[in-house]
Length: 67
Image (cartoon, rainbow, N blue to C red):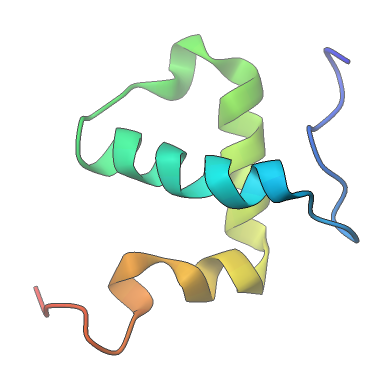
């Protein structure tokens, strides 16, 4: 499992629906450095490629505060 992503791009398990927001909050709110967590870093990069996850980001919501 070391060389494989947690999910496959055709079918996203429920666990990934919970993991993606936790990664986002950890990185953006608590400044967690994913360099120590290679698997999570690769998973986050894979999430970033999916339009479903991009569209679900808090900053992409219609009621998101403008910065």
